[in-house]
Amino acid sequence: MTNTLVRITYDGTNYSGFQIQANAPTIQGELELALEVIYKRPIRITGAGRTDAGVHALGQYANFRAPFQIAAEQLPHALNAILPPDIVITEAREVSEEFHARFDARRKVYSYTVNRAIFPQVFRRFYSLHLPDPLNLAAIRKASKLFIGTHDFKAFQAAGNSTGDTVRTLYRLDVRGIPEKELLLFEFEGSGFLYRMVRLITGTLLQAGKGVLTLPDIEASLVGLNPAAVGPTVPAHGLCLEMVNYPQQDR
Amino acid sequence: MTNTLVRITYDGTNYSGFQIQANAPTIQGELELALEVIYKRPIRITGAGRTDAGVHALGQYANFRAPFQIAAEQLPHALNAILPPDIVITEAREVSEEFHARFDARRKVYSYTVNRAIFPQVFRRFYSLHLPDPLNLAAIRKASKLFIGTHDFKAFQAAGNSTGDTVRTLYRLDVRGIPEKELLLFEFEGSGFLYRMVRLITGTLLQAGKGVLTLPDIEASLVGLNPAAVGPTVPAHGLCLEMVNYPQQDR
Image 1 (tube, each protein chain N blue to C red):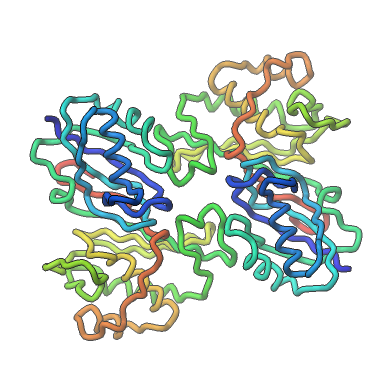
Image 2: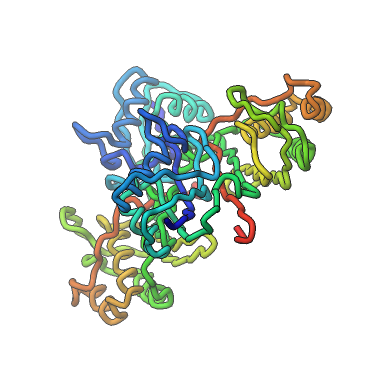
């Protein structure tokens, strides 16, 4: 059995998320179907992490064990010929027997895109949150710095997920305006993310930008003293899993 | 009756083109429906030009005569609240009684986007032609210069359109590589365009880039001596009407 790692890009618009479900289209479901066509037997994949319904990815990863080997240069072409056009494999390679796409992930990068145009940009409507309201960018940048570092992000996870350890390290939280495209881009790089953590932090930062939340409000919420100063969860369609980094692999 | 000019942006993916048709969704049809809701009577619009099924626009224009006046700042919001999300009005203003969006158009700008990534970029699949094949950019640039200026573009129109005068002036034909996005962008600015002229010229330039057509081939086709050295017509979804310029209006 060879252990293969693939990089998956997808437009999440028409999927009920990454993780396989019985009666809904999912990224995992489509990919496992395509792998079964190629390998002539059921193949179970292990994703680097789940993404919610409507969330996109340019750098999702998954590994699987296959009964025979297909050249890494050929496999993406073979899979893309079977997969629907909104799921595209851009890379494949053999990894060690014990490699695990979730447990071995060291860092993940997520982006959240806000469209600041007065009227929504039609080509970006599935890939950004349209928010033309005035925002104080300086306040957003100041608030963003509070989240960088190692914190207990307990207040920044959605209900429904029973993670024991809620301490995570955020290495980077860039807030970048791209005026010529009327975009505001949030980029998160962290050791891992709690359920809906990126969308909750982004929602919190936007509230800071609107003047609804102050720096002390957010500082208090980060130490668990002000659970009301969190969120709201921004919509899924602005979120994209950009990259997963694995050790010794420069990714 | 006030004469109003609107700027229309649309994702053409789900439409049978700009011009109204009986049993198919069109941009004109949707816009006239929305105008009827607002003005409580049927309104006929005059577009700057037709676009084919699947073609997009960021700068289409149309004018119409309305029974009463709505403030130009309010009208786009009112229309966008009724229009489907893939059609967005970004501007409205009153124009003179005799203004005609088609006859008064002085210049039009079209773009054609080619996605050069090895594997198609999922977010761009509806807005660019995926063409990872090797291309000789220098040959494309040289060939592009042949088209600039005033020519009889008779050989560069699709059948089915009975235009008498086939002389047009192409002011600009930029060929721009955007390596960091793996895109190749063609930008056409001209006095007007024959039916499918942009897609036929783009197809011809891509053939030059593949080494299938030579400069002398294309020169001959431009003077009507080599009708075989034309095209093919590239697919609609890479094409976008970027802008229409009207006199005295700096647009």
